[in-house]
Length: 225
Image 1 (tube, one colour):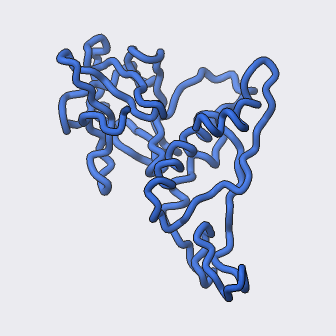
Image 2 (cartoon, one colour; image 1 turned 45 degrees about the vertical axis):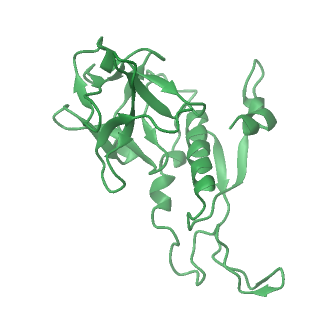
Image 3 (spheres, helix red, strand yellow; image 1 turned 135 degrees about the horizontal axis):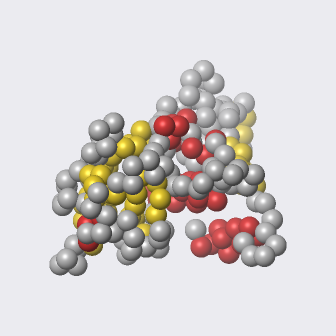
């Protein structure tokens, strides 16, 4: 992301910022390139954080003729090669949050955070009994407050805090906001890892329990350096 900021994103910073529009934004809908998928997670999170406008590349599923080849598939396209079905059925969910206004400069409402999981396109929601958290649609996500690194993360409606309970265990909502397990900071260069530290110096990061689960647990942080 530093390269993007150095070459383009810097125009939104400083005392005289300018709006920035991201054009021809997209990725291989087959999701077969691990490096590209990881970059898209970072870039999507950056777009959400800055509430940037963007336009998708691209819509078509194939071409009549391109670079000497008849009817080649457009791997970045939303449609399949027959233009009859969506190629990647998780696409719409992944980009749901980016289609909404996240920072309204004319609003008088108090500010808060949503906790966004760019890999799935979902956000964190508190359970109805206020005992735990899970991934859900960003249209119904909970609102959170966070004073910065080394402070607790509180749900705005109740003031309860996120608390880690150990390796592989579900994160709870607790009134104990001063314990070591209730203090969080963003780690790694991407700042996409939210971690808490145990008394013996180990770090635990928020993670989904598995690829087919919506539960949020803490596990030893990976790829943090």
